[in-house]
Length: 374
Image (cartoon, rainbow, N blue to C red; front, side, top):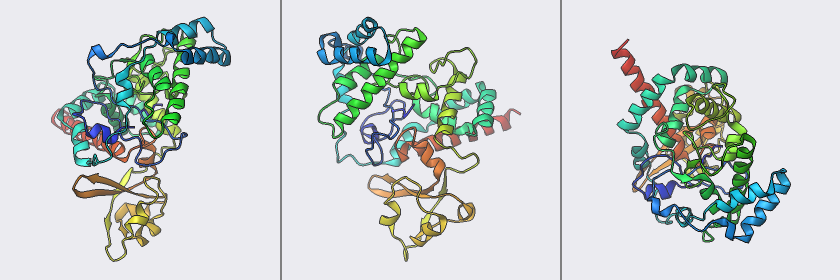
């Protein structure tokens, strides 16, 4: 999938309205890593048109190659790719953020965990309680994690993006900004997403010119990229269509299936509290693997990380998660394999923690509501 679409530092520079896309990773650059999705922040309609790709030989050659490779009608593929438009605003939004922009977890958190989003989450949970319980039982993914994802991404469908998906994907496939340090890799990735997008619509006999989503081509309440929709999408309401824009059942089932596919461990916490023993602390060594769980509990403590209670009995590997707070001291937690699974949706520890904490806040608010109105 999703991803789910890059953009942690970029997002910190914006007065963010909704979905959550984190950084283009806390680190790493492998093309095989799940790709995050980008913000669905609204842009003026005047910026939503540009020259059609029918005028570009490169795009038309892509269409011909795709038709031959996937056994599609060449005229149909050329027509669809040709009607896609080059949106300059999409290319600009993919420019790398200023290197000097500091990360700030407290600021990031405040943009995704507020009364509006928590209230919307409580309503979503109440309206979809049975489906969330069913998904938790079948896939083993807690309801609060599913609710956290959908809330962080689109405020439960309130802000799913208004870019034509085919325009966003074509622009990033053929006009990804050359100034980006991974331009060639990213362009290749988006060509693959454009291909999958067209194949899906041909199979469903639907128009690829209609869907709207983020400026990175992500779509629906959970902001799945086309490849994620193809791989993890679930027809959870049984109508023989995977509809991630209107069917909350399909959305819940697909998000849960995504996490199960990436190895969610049922019953495992996402993280534990951690503090440091300054006499033994090797912070550089603890942070070296980044967010990848690497250390068993004993080794974790040998390097100066102090964990207590249930964390001491944790059987799997742990990672030291650092969440920077601008000029203030960073926040640290001991991340488990399940924390890492959440970052498969979006390659950012800040994003993962926002999902976890939003889900927790919604669950607690729901509990208070239930206590008042049993």
